[in-house]
Image 1 (cartoon, one colour):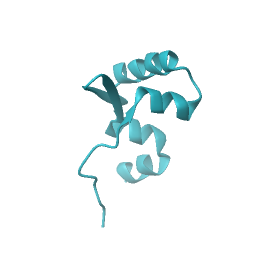
Image 2: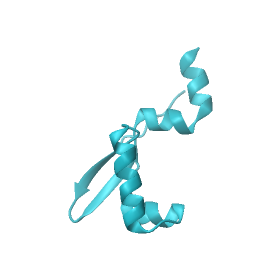
Image 3: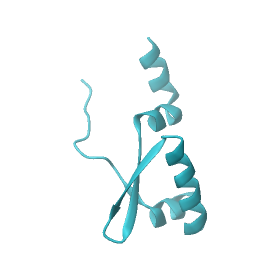
Image 4: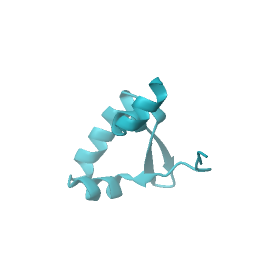
Length: 71
């Protein structure tokens, strides 16, 4: 059985920056580039921007998903 989340797990720009070891500004620029490639999406919530992976972004990160979707 496959379970889908009812919400999109999202991280703020600061959280992403801390997890990948970049400045907030550098992380923001990279995330915007990934959004241009439609690998992540974002939304502004209050004063913060939050980011989450798109289906294409997940496929890029999970090679097993690539194999199962091509079968």
